Amino acid sequence: MKQTTQSYKDIFANPNHWAEHQVTINGVTYGMDAIVKLSTPGQLFDTSGPGIGSAVSREMELEFMPRGTIPAAAKCVVKTRIGAIDEATGFEQWSTWIPMGEFYIDSRAYDETGEVMKVHCYDAMLKTEYVYLDKHMDSDSGASWPKRAREVYQNISADIGVTGSADVIQAIPASWVMPYPGNKTARDLLREIAVALGGNFVVNDSGLLACVRLKKSTTVAQDLKLNVGALERGVDSGAFTKVRITGIQGVEGVTEYTAGNDTGLTIEGECPWGTQAIADSVLSTIAGWVYRPYTASEALLDPAVEIGDTVKINGWTSMVAKLDRNFDKMCDATLSAPEDEELNHEYPYVYTGYKGNHELKKVEQEVNKVDAEVAGLKSDLGETNKSLSETNKNLEAFKGSIGSMSSQRTTALNFSKWSSKEFTETLEGGTVMTYTLTFDSSGRPTKVTASDGHAIGITW
Image 1 (cartoon, rainbow, N blue to C red):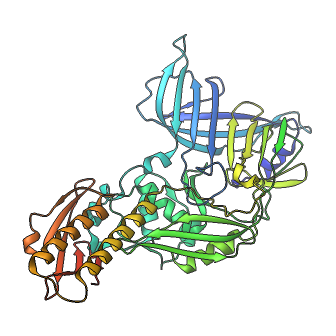
Image 2: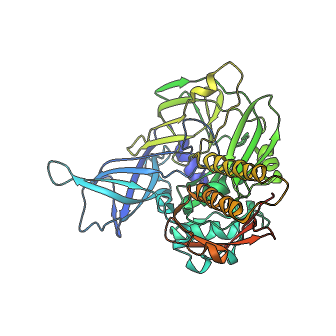
């Protein structure tokens, strides 16, 4: 929740208060006389229910009467203040303006009169859809990695033009290091950090790149009582009692760290550099947390409340996981913690809160396939040396296995230098990786070393 003054709190406590809003675009401020319609839908999770490892962009829908030129991708800064009549003096009282979000125009159109412009905007999180190394060519080398997660987070904040949250910087231990990212986007890397922190990244109303951590909050941002137009409650989930962190590092295979027990629900996230200590830390944050689905519409929500805050409605509490504000005089909102159908199943199951991509499992299958083929070669060779022609045959099979293993991440394999005990592959994006082979006295490969430092041993 945003920090507000006592004067703001006193005005909001007046049941007859109202709100005013403004949007500043290209140095021009548009007030209520120019704003026809304004809303800012946003959410915490990129799935239908609770999880960790999301980094979702918030949106803004604005209809207004523009003055002058509106540049492409212009920044739109939204602010709100509240006012009321001072009963003692009869004069209007106004709070200071508080931030309500920063957005960038993505598309625009005029209404039928040609006077009202309609713009659709996103916040700065959308800017994280770039390959991290494209902006950090000086780091585009395996030799300069791993890097501290704190440094990567601060670089991403600067790249997208927002301020890194001091809370996040302090929460990321100096011991957390991230491996060479290859073609990963900045959003991919943020998601990994979010998993390790046990939360989800957002760009908050103040323009900070913040991480909302899942936990049993004891702080209620606002008690709405029954100040909602309609309220629909879902069924509370069971308590979360287990954490599973999974990832993959190079060709070493899948890693998995678990903490807790199966007496309740499990929350899962993907983090290639995860550790047992990270899994334990996330568990300490979410242990016992219960997700309480609901939808409250036409709620008289305090403008200072943000996504991730806890609110009380009719005597019970839940989190604001999804928020759509209408910027009119009432400043009403629809807020919710969306229902997840999986939470309603009564037959025992293991819930995975993070539904990430399945490329990890595909790579794992390829690694297992290569292992099986190498084992088959060992069986064929037996315990004695085979002839040179037989060895060459097995080397060709090994080359095919390498190609299968690499197919998930390469665009081309080149074995033209096989005779000199090396071959190359071209990754998506054009990066060329070189692999050097080590052979035993019988001509069998015993080790493959990549130019980024990764190596895989082969046992015959």
